[in-house]
Amino acid sequence: MTGLLQTAVLLVTALGLLSAMAVYAVARRLPPAVAVLLDFLTAAGLLRLAAAPSWSDLALAAMVIAIRKLVSGNLRASRPAIGTAGAAGLREHLRDRRPHDMGRRTGEHGAPRKRPGAGP
Amino acid sequence: MGPVMDVSLESLLLSGVDVLVRLVEAAGALIIFVGAVWAFVQFLIVGLRRSGGDRAFTSVRLRLGRFLALGLEFQLAGDILRTAVAPSFAEIGQLAAIATIRTALNFFLSREIAEERAQIERDRNEGPRNEREFPKP
Image 1: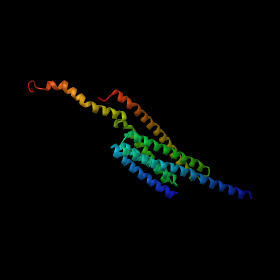
Image 2: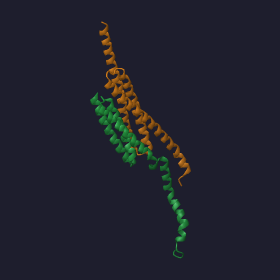
Image 3: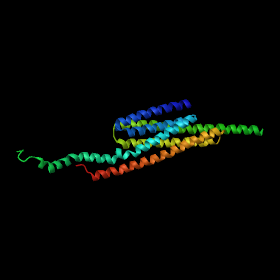
Image 4: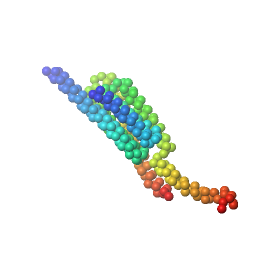
């Protein structure tokens, strides 16, 4: 059973790395990929604890969980700056509105910049 | 005759609890493993479709978190069973440490799941409002 569990631990770690790479490839941002990797590493740590646990295994699992808490807390704290779906919608809206706004601006401020008599 | 019967009963109880503990812990480990494989497949599907963005990834992470929490519950059940037959102080100490770690992790996981769910709900509610407030030209 211990051998089987160790194989499962390795497999889950490898799946976590692959998933994190897939998430990074799609999202092009590091925080979601790190969060996914940490979730899989937690799963691997829990599986390792299910095998015959020693004090060093326990300390290792506790450290992984502590690091996970620290990093996920930081990720959550920085999430509003990175952008939620609402912020993404606002960005998209501003991008869509920009040509219109710019056109209005050139209509208001562009005409006085023109030299009189320069055009036909 | 009496002491012999006591010894055989005790060994029967020990072996019975041992089998139960192994069964329950194997179930917990299986749930965690299945959850990890399922999440991997889902991440690949979401990645290949390239749709849904962060919200889709968060929803898959939530499901994985639920699998982990369920597996942890099983492992905690195994710990509780084991306390029935823990013969030495060293083993009881180790058991207490494992149970503490698992309980703490379960607590944090449940809190994270609740927070992520609230975040998804907020995003879902904010989405249509933004559409209304800022209609596309």
